[in-house]
Length: 351
Image (cartoon, rainbow, N blue to C red; front, side, top):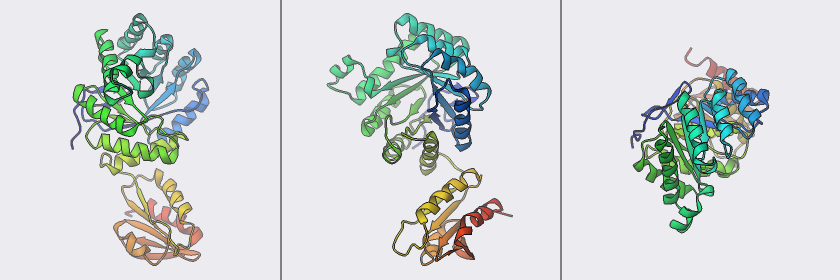
């Protein structure tokens, strides 16, 4: 299915919506006030493939830190604001490329208007965020519980509130930890608005459960052409979010490039530490700009045959392994040299 057409929105020097590529977003877990630690984490996330970064702004010191952080990074910087409208205005004044607010907890209409005016003055997009966990009491009563319909009505109502204040440079985000409810809500809202959508499953959990829930939820949503930016929310190192997001987009055919690592399940024939080796290969190829498939096989019985669909592969044996190119054994190397020899092959690919 083709991408749904949404309006274009500029976030710093990036453009989302209007058929532009889906961008990967993450959020720092450092104290934003600690400029050095925050910048260092953003640099690592950028190197891994993060394209938009969000930082929490719980204090005025964090808002002021934005000015210095922004000077030292190369991707758009988004301010995450709750409750205090003054923090939103300060973040905008200190260079935020986008702000994320929930108009429901920002205070009175006058306070929201002050935030909207500050954003409008600099043409900074506002992301209107609604989580199922913070759905208004009246909507819970209206729909007899937390529902997709209630989440959509809440988000569209908040977007309309800002539009009525004379500003429509918006991105909408509706999230729920209930995967199927989240999917249903996105299907409904995509029919009712052309604002770009930031997509994610909130509170999805630890690395394993979070990846599974995010992969299913994002897969079902993105496959319908819905979504302009994504975040895989995981309880762990934000770098894991980037790896997962890239793989989800690649698996759905929404992004090309980068090395894909495939590996066989372990069995009784496996004579090397395949689990560790496959993980090492995945980390090792992350910085190599090739569009290839690399196979990591655990034994020399099926290794060469199973690696045929890959461009290059390695198969382990007793204290040694094979380098395989296009299904043909290329050479035998010591087990301890498998990783370094594979890297050498990739760095000189096509020569």
